Length: 305
Image (cartoon, rainbow, N blue to C red; front, side):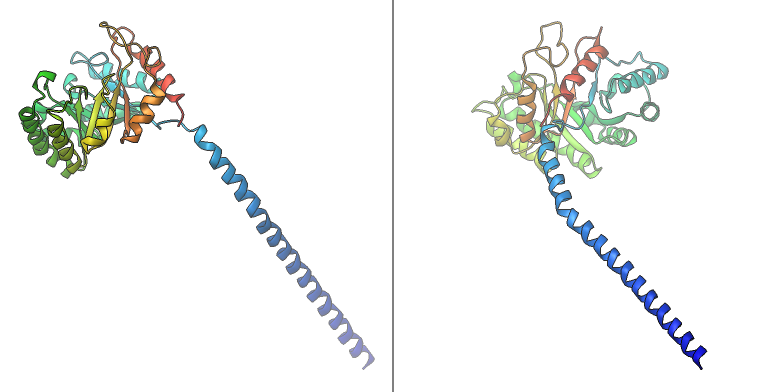
C-alpha cells in the first residue's frame, strides 16, 4: 500500500510538472505575440515615412517609347537587319516602340517575331488617316498581331485648311474609323501637328473633334515643339494621350532631348495633367539616330515627379 501511495505521489508530481511546462510555453508564446504586435505600429510608421519620401525619387513616367520612324527604319530593311535594329534599341534601354508601319516592308507576323526576340513591346502603329479609312480592318488586324495598344493617325490637314468645314469632315472621318478601332479594344489617337492653329473662328470645330475622340475613348497626340496654348487642352474635351518629343533644333533636324531649350520637366508635368500617358521619343538625325535616342532616354529618365 505504501508503494502504491508513492506511485500516486510521483504521478501527481509528474502531472504538476507537465502542467507547469505547458503554462510556461503558452505564456512565452503569448509574450512573443505581444512583442510582435507591439512592433507593428513602429514598422507601419517607418513604412509611411518611406512612402511619403518616395515621390521625390519616382520617375516622371515609367516608360518612354521610341518612335521607329524613317530615320531608323525604311522599306530597304531585311528581316535580319530589322531584327538587329530592334535588339540595338532594346540594348539602349527602351522597352517599347511606336512603329510607323507603312515604312517597313516586312509582314506583321515577322515583325511580331522580331519584337519578341528583342524583348520589345509595340505601343502602337502609326498609319495615315486616308490609308486607315481605306482599309481599317487590315490595320486593326495588324495592330492586334503586334499586340499594340493604340493606332496613331494623322491627316494632311494643313494650317491653311483648319476651317470649320474641313474640321467637321475630319471629325466624321475619325468617327467612322474610330468606332471599329474602339470595338477591337484599341485606342485611336489623332496626331494634331500643332494647336497653334486653333483660333476663335475654328475653336468650336476643334471642340467637336475633341468630343468625337472622347466618345471613342481616344485622344490627341501632339508633335514636337508645337504644344500650343495649354488653355485649349481642357476646352477640347479630350485628353492629350501621346506626345512625340522632339528637342528644339534647326532645319537639319532636332538634337537629342536635353540638348536644346525646352524645359522638359515642366512641359511633361503640364501635359500629364491633361492626360498624357505616352511620351514618345522622336529623333531626326539619321546619321546618329540611335546615339541621340540613347542620350534622350537618359535625359528623360532623370526627370522626377
